[in-house]
Length: 117
Image 1 (cartoon, rainbow, N blue to C red):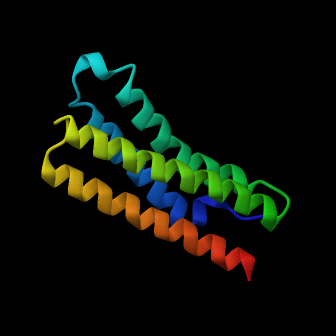
Image 2: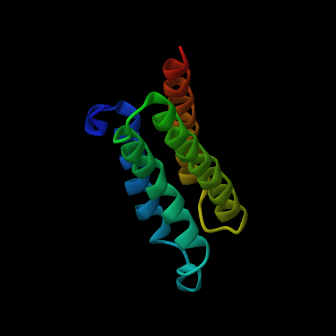
């Protein structure tokens, strides 16, 4: 259907994943198998589901995977809020990460709208 590597939203998802991995390196070691794991899995799911949807046969299926990707973006936003509340992220990194996440949420929603036309 689409070459996912050409999609700006996929590229943004890759960038968010890289940023999140860098960010979680500073988390306490005891968080490695709990919040850190949840955060990195959510971040990786965003571009992964976009890519998987691109390989599907119809716009309807692609849209379904975009919905899953959007859900992962909202899940990631919640986890970043929790990490900030727990004191694992400083305000500057929190604000920067939330802005990135909100931007990809808008991009995914926009792509979904364009498929519905």
